[in-house]
Image 1 (tube, rainbow, N blue to C red):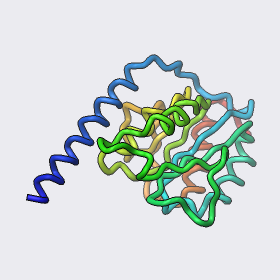
Image 2 (image 1 turned 60 degrees about the horizontal axis):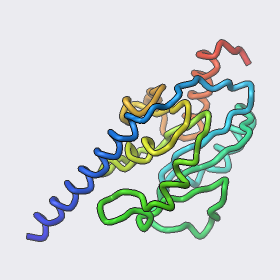
Image 3 (image 1 turned 45 degrees about the vertical axis):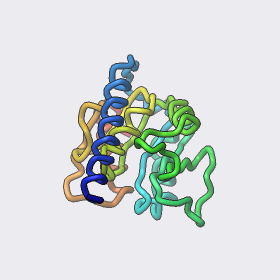
Length: 185
């Protein structure tokens, strides 16, 4: 009986997230390839287990892309003790969602205010369509994902192969951006 209730609740969450994803996709978004020479505003989506490499990721991104503003969006079970939530580091916790799996209004408003030029999705967590839902809520003009993500929600999907290190993934992404923009940096 408990298992049946859990499955029903899970299907309810999936229904509401799919509906919101579809609604968010239908909203007109201006697709614009980022000018990597002009210090783009950038957000990187990470899972909790990827936060250990934030300093190295930050250093690489600042040295290569020189973003005007860099923000990390991190999916966490609980608020970490070793990192502070700030304009640079934004955490999304379980408690930020309502009973049907949709972000509470105040968090959704903050997330929708991220109108960056470049959004990079390094998250592998797509349990109950969480990753897809969050990506659909961000209003970036260019979204980069990886082969494990929903291709409809990203403007560029990169296959990193067997590479699991986030810094190395960012280096591969940077090479793609250079190649697509015609730069030889």
